[in-house]
Length: 192
Ligand code: SAM
Image (cartoon, rainbow, N blue to C red):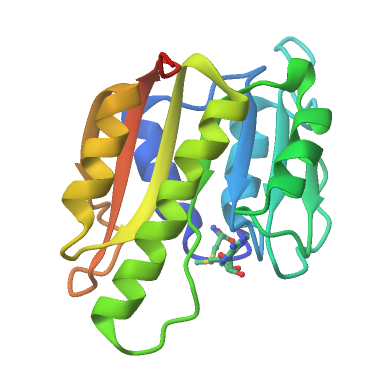
């Protein structure tokens, strides 16, 4: 009983790569209605279901309202790209650090494929700024994008701060959609 079928994409990705470990802190960007957060809560044990395992943290963010979920803290009506949201995240995360940033964010599709692609890439790029503020060295990022001309630019940026970047197309993602995910692992803070 997930809130949305999108849960199966994250389950598939996590079954393959084991990103979400008990005790981990996770930020879920574009969390509404909350299905990815449900998966994250289970996997990091943030509701303390398994008393033997360390208890993790899940913080979800959306510009829309996200209905409450045990084990998750939601920043409803918050924009992921807004620095004020970043400040709140720093307070909510233990030690101000996340092990994993998830993003299934998407703008409202205008129907103009290139424009939507461009908008989503800009949102993904903002996640790299967020990572610099909150992502633990060695941490991971999963972000959805729509295929198009600016993908290489995003990939290059990701590769400048993550040791490994790969493209995923889960079976649960419709074959005929332009939807893809980047899985970026082994974060290293940029040297400045
Ligand atoms: N992963 C979610 C789940 O499993 O329930 C579904 C996410 S839905 C495909 C994309 C979400 O991104 C929408 O709820 C939308 O409001 C949100 N979104 C779009 N732009 C955003 C932004 N700038 N900040 C936060 N959320 C945003």
